[in-house]
Amino acid sequence: MTARKWAIEEHKDVDSGEANRIQGLQEPFIQHEKDAAACKDVESNTTVENGSIGMVLLLFVVLSHLELVGYSAPTQAAIREDLNLSLAEFSMFGSLVTIGATLGAITSGRITDFIGRKGAMRMSTGFCITGWLAVFFSKDPYSLDLGRFFTGYGIGVISFVVPVYIAEIAPKNLRGGLATTNQLMIVIGSSISFLLGSFLSWRQLALAGLVPCISLLIGLHFIPESPRWLAKVGLKKEFQVALRKLGKRC
Image 1 (cartoon, rainbow, N blue to C red):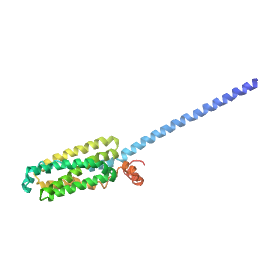
Image 2 (image 1 turned 120 degrees about the vertical axis):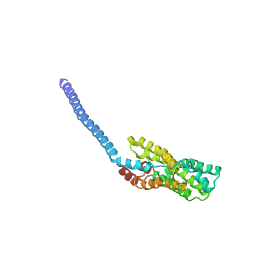
Image 3 (image 1 turned 90 degrees about the vertical axis):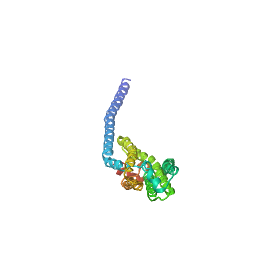
Image 4 (image 1 turned 30 degrees about the vertical axis):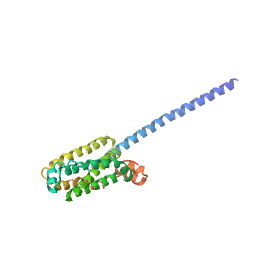
Protein backbone atom coordinates (compact mmCIF):
# COMPACT_ATOMS: atom_id res chain seq x y z
CA MET A 1 0.00 0.00 0.00
CA THR A 2 2.81 2.37 0.92
CA ALA A 3 4.73 1.49 -2.25
CA ARG A 4 1.63 2.14 -4.33
CA LYS A 5 1.04 5.54 -2.68
CA TRP A 6 4.68 6.46 -3.20
CA ALA A 7 4.46 5.52 -6.88
CA ILE A 8 1.33 7.66 -7.35
CA GLU A 9 2.94 10.68 -5.70
CA GLU A 10 6.08 10.28 -7.76
CA HIS A 11 3.98 10.08 -10.92
CA LYS A 12 2.23 13.32 -9.95
CA ASP A 13 5.56 15.01 -9.34
CA VAL A 14 6.79 13.89 -12.73
CA ASP A 15 3.60 15.19 -14.40
CA SER A 16 3.87 18.48 -12.51
CA GLY A 17 7.52 18.89 -13.44
CA GLU A 18 6.82 18.07 -17.05
CA ALA A 19 3.99 20.58 -17.13
CA ASN A 20 6.14 23.27 -15.56
CA ARG A 21 8.95 22.52 -17.97
CA ILE A 22 6.60 22.75 -20.96
CA GLN A 23 5.12 26.00 -19.65
CA GLY A 24 8.60 27.40 -19.13
CA LEU A 25 9.51 26.51 -22.69
CA GLN A 26 6.32 27.97 -24.09
CA GLU A 27 6.41 31.39 -22.47
CA PRO A 28 9.69 32.66 -24.00
CA PHE A 29 8.81 31.16 -27.35
CA ILE A 30 5.42 32.89 -27.51
CA GLN A 31 6.94 36.16 -26.33
CA HIS A 32 9.66 35.89 -28.94
CA GLU A 33 7.06 35.28 -31.62
CA LYS A 34 5.10 38.35 -30.56
CA ASP A 35 8.23 40.48 -30.58
CA ALA A 36 9.16 39.23 -34.02
CA ALA A 37 5.68 40.02 -35.31
CA ALA A 38 5.83 43.50 -33.80
CA CYS A 39 9.23 44.12 -35.33
CA LYS A 40 7.95 42.92 -38.67
CA ASP A 41 4.98 45.29 -38.49
CA VAL A 42 7.23 48.23 -37.64
CA GLU A 43 9.59 47.34 -40.46
CA SER A 44 6.68 46.99 -42.87
CA ASN A 45 5.22 50.35 -41.89
CA THR A 46 8.63 51.99 -42.26
CA THR A 47 9.05 50.46 -45.69
CA VAL A 48 5.63 51.65 -46.78
CA GLU A 49 6.20 55.19 -45.57
CA ASN A 50 9.73 55.50 -46.92
CA GLY A 51 9.11 53.63 -50.14
CA SER A 52 6.03 55.61 -51.12
CA ILE A 53 7.29 59.12 -50.39
CA GLY A 54 8.36 59.61 -54.01
CA MET A 55 5.00 58.38 -55.23
CA VAL A 56 3.26 60.77 -52.85
CA LEU A 57 5.17 63.70 -54.34
CA LEU A 58 4.12 62.58 -57.80
CA LEU A 59 0.53 62.28 -56.63
CA PHE A 60 0.75 65.82 -55.32
CA VAL A 61 1.87 67.10 -58.72
CA VAL A 62 -0.57 65.03 -60.78
CA LEU A 63 -3.72 65.24 -58.70
CA SER A 64 -3.35 68.84 -57.56
CA HIS A 65 -4.49 70.02 -60.96
CA LEU A 66 -6.22 73.29 -61.73
CA GLU A 67 -9.62 73.57 -63.32
CA LEU A 68 -10.65 76.92 -64.77
CA VAL A 69 -14.22 76.52 -63.53
CA GLY A 70 -14.77 80.28 -63.44
CA TYR A 71 -14.20 80.70 -67.16
CA SER A 72 -17.50 82.38 -68.06
CA ALA A 73 -17.30 85.28 -65.59
CA PRO A 74 -14.36 87.27 -67.02
CA THR A 75 -15.25 86.49 -70.66
CA GLN A 76 -18.91 87.48 -70.74
CA ALA A 77 -18.60 90.80 -72.56
CA ALA A 78 -16.05 89.56 -75.12
CA ILE A 79 -17.95 86.38 -76.04
CA ARG A 80 -21.26 88.21 -76.39
CA GLU A 81 -19.64 90.79 -78.64
CA ASP A 82 -17.71 88.37 -80.86
CA LEU A 83 -20.48 85.81 -81.34
CA ASN A 84 -23.45 88.18 -81.07
CA LEU A 85 -24.97 86.29 -78.16
CA SER A 86 -28.00 87.52 -76.31
CA LEU A 87 -28.01 87.60 -72.53
CA ALA A 88 -30.18 84.48 -72.46
CA GLU A 89 -27.81 82.60 -74.77
CA PHE A 90 -24.80 83.50 -72.68
CA SER A 91 -26.67 82.56 -69.51
CA MET A 92 -27.29 79.14 -71.02
CA PHE A 93 -23.58 78.89 -71.86
CA GLY A 94 -22.62 79.72 -68.28
CA SER A 95 -25.05 77.24 -66.71
CA LEU A 96 -24.18 74.28 -68.93
CA VAL A 97 -21.01 73.57 -66.96
CA THR A 98 -23.16 72.92 -63.89
CA ILE A 99 -25.55 70.70 -65.82
CA GLY A 100 -22.66 68.73 -67.29
CA ALA A 101 -20.96 68.42 -63.90
CA THR A 102 -24.20 67.10 -62.40
CA LEU A 103 -24.51 64.39 -65.04
CA GLY A 104 -20.81 63.59 -64.71
CA ALA A 105 -21.13 63.16 -60.96
CA ILE A 106 -24.18 60.90 -61.37
CA THR A 107 -22.42 58.57 -63.82
CA SER A 108 -18.94 58.76 -62.29
CA GLY A 109 -19.41 55.88 -59.84
CA ARG A 110 -20.27 53.31 -62.50
CA ILE A 111 -17.58 54.62 -64.83
CA THR A 112 -14.92 54.48 -62.11
CA ASP A 113 -15.80 50.90 -61.21
CA PHE A 114 -15.96 49.77 -64.84
CA ILE A 115 -12.78 51.24 -66.36
CA GLY A 116 -10.78 51.91 -63.20
CA ARG A 117 -9.64 55.04 -61.41
CA LYS A 118 -6.98 55.98 -63.96
CA GLY A 119 -9.32 55.16 -66.82
CA ALA A 120 -11.98 57.47 -65.41
CA MET A 121 -9.44 60.26 -64.99
CA ARG A 122 -8.26 59.79 -68.58
CA MET A 123 -11.83 59.84 -69.84
CA SER A 124 -12.72 62.98 -67.88
CA THR A 125 -9.55 64.69 -69.11
CA GLY A 126 -10.52 63.77 -72.67
CA PHE A 127 -13.92 65.40 -72.19
CA CYS A 128 -12.29 68.53 -70.78
CA ILE A 129 -9.79 68.78 -73.65
CA THR A 130 -12.58 68.29 -76.21
CA GLY A 131 -14.67 70.90 -74.46
CA TRP A 132 -11.94 73.53 -74.34
CA LEU A 133 -11.08 72.95 -78.01
CA ALA A 134 -14.75 73.28 -78.96
CA VAL A 135 -14.93 76.57 -77.08
CA PHE A 136 -11.74 77.81 -78.73
CA PHE A 137 -12.90 77.00 -82.28
CA SER A 138 -16.56 77.91 -81.76
CA LYS A 139 -18.20 80.18 -84.31
CA ASP A 140 -21.78 79.91 -83.06
CA PRO A 141 -23.64 79.38 -79.78
CA TYR A 142 -24.18 75.66 -80.39
CA SER A 143 -20.50 74.64 -80.52
CA LEU A 144 -19.84 77.01 -77.62
CA ASP A 145 -22.54 75.35 -75.52
CA LEU A 146 -21.39 71.86 -76.50
CA GLY A 147 -17.84 72.62 -75.45
CA ARG A 148 -19.00 74.05 -72.15
CA PHE A 149 -21.15 70.98 -71.48
CA PHE A 150 -18.26 68.60 -72.21
CA THR A 151 -16.00 70.56 -69.90
CA GLY A 152 -18.59 70.38 -67.13
CA TYR A 153 -19.08 66.65 -67.61
CA GLY A 154 -15.34 66.03 -67.32
CA ILE A 155 -15.17 68.16 -64.17
CA GLY A 156 -18.07 66.20 -62.64
CA VAL A 157 -16.37 62.84 -63.23
CA ILE A 158 -12.93 63.88 -62.04
CA SER A 159 -14.32 65.59 -58.94
CA PHE A 160 -15.51 62.15 -57.82
CA VAL A 161 -12.69 59.88 -58.92
CA VAL A 162 -9.73 61.92 -57.63
CA PRO A 163 -10.75 61.78 -53.92
CA VAL A 164 -11.48 58.06 -54.32
CA TYR A 165 -8.08 57.45 -55.89
CA ILE A 166 -6.30 59.44 -53.18
CA ALA A 167 -8.11 57.51 -50.44
CA GLU A 168 -7.11 54.17 -51.96
CA ILE A 169 -3.50 54.89 -52.88
CA ALA A 170 -2.04 57.45 -50.45
CA PRO A 171 -0.50 56.59 -47.05
CA LYS A 172 -2.90 57.23 -44.19
CA ASN A 173 -0.73 59.93 -42.65
CA LEU A 174 -0.84 61.99 -45.89
CA ARG A 175 -4.28 61.06 -47.19
CA GLY A 176 -6.12 63.99 -45.65
CA GLY A 177 -3.55 66.52 -46.80
CA LEU A 178 -3.68 65.32 -50.40
CA ALA A 179 -7.49 65.36 -50.47
CA THR A 180 -7.51 68.88 -49.04
CA THR A 181 -4.93 70.02 -51.58
CA ASN A 182 -7.09 68.70 -54.40
CA GLN A 183 -10.05 70.77 -53.22
CA LEU A 184 -7.81 73.79 -52.68
CA MET A 185 -6.50 73.61 -56.23
CA ILE A 186 -10.05 73.72 -57.61
CA VAL A 187 -10.63 77.01 -55.79
CA ILE A 188 -7.23 78.33 -56.90
CA GLY A 189 -8.07 77.41 -60.50
CA SER A 190 -11.25 79.45 -60.28
CA SER A 191 -9.28 82.44 -58.96
CA ILE A 192 -6.64 82.09 -61.68
CA SER A 193 -9.33 82.10 -64.37
CA PHE A 194 -10.51 85.48 -63.09
CA LEU A 195 -6.97 86.87 -63.13
CA LEU A 196 -6.07 85.51 -66.57
CA GLY A 197 -9.37 86.74 -67.98
CA SER A 198 -8.29 90.29 -67.22
CA PHE A 199 -5.60 90.34 -69.92
CA LEU A 200 -6.29 87.28 -72.14
CA SER A 201 -8.96 86.99 -74.81
CA TRP A 202 -11.68 84.42 -74.30
CA ARG A 203 -10.14 82.12 -76.90
CA GLN A 204 -6.72 82.37 -75.29
CA LEU A 205 -8.26 81.62 -71.91
CA ALA A 206 -9.81 78.48 -73.40
CA LEU A 207 -6.34 77.40 -74.51
CA ALA A 208 -5.06 78.08 -71.00
CA GLY A 209 -7.65 75.59 -69.76
CA LEU A 210 -5.87 72.90 -71.78
CA VAL A 211 -2.65 73.23 -69.78
CA PRO A 212 -3.79 71.47 -66.55
CA CYS A 213 -5.64 68.85 -68.59
CA ILE A 214 -2.58 67.94 -70.63
CA SER A 215 -0.35 67.91 -67.54
CA LEU A 216 -2.75 65.54 -65.82
CA LEU A 217 -2.96 63.31 -68.89
CA ILE A 218 0.84 63.06 -69.03
CA GLY A 219 1.19 62.49 -65.30
CA LEU A 220 -1.25 59.58 -65.37
CA HIS A 221 1.37 57.54 -67.25
CA PHE A 222 3.67 57.65 -64.22
CA ILE A 223 1.32 56.69 -61.39
CA PRO A 224 -0.10 53.18 -60.83
CA GLU A 225 -3.70 52.10 -60.95
CA SER A 226 -5.44 51.75 -57.61
CA PRO A 227 -4.45 48.35 -56.12
CA ARG A 228 -7.88 48.12 -54.50
CA TRP A 229 -9.62 48.31 -57.88
CA LEU A 230 -7.16 45.85 -59.44
CA ALA A 231 -7.84 43.36 -56.64
CA LYS A 232 -11.58 43.91 -57.02
CA VAL A 233 -11.55 42.99 -60.72
CA GLY A 234 -9.15 40.07 -60.20
CA LEU A 235 -6.04 41.43 -61.94
CA LYS A 236 -3.55 39.78 -59.60
CA LYS A 237 -0.35 40.46 -61.55
CA GLU A 238 -1.20 44.15 -62.10
CA PHE A 239 -2.17 44.36 -58.43
CA GLN A 240 1.27 43.19 -57.32
CA VAL A 241 3.02 45.56 -59.74
CA ALA A 242 1.00 48.50 -58.41
CA LEU A 243 1.89 47.61 -54.83
CA ARG A 244 5.58 47.46 -55.67
CA LYS A 245 5.41 50.87 -57.33
CA LEU A 246 3.86 52.26 -54.18
CA GLY A 247 6.57 50.71 -52.01
CA LYS A 248 4.15 48.32 -50.32
CA ARG A 249 4.67 44.63 -49.64
CA CYS A 250 2.46 42.19 -51.48
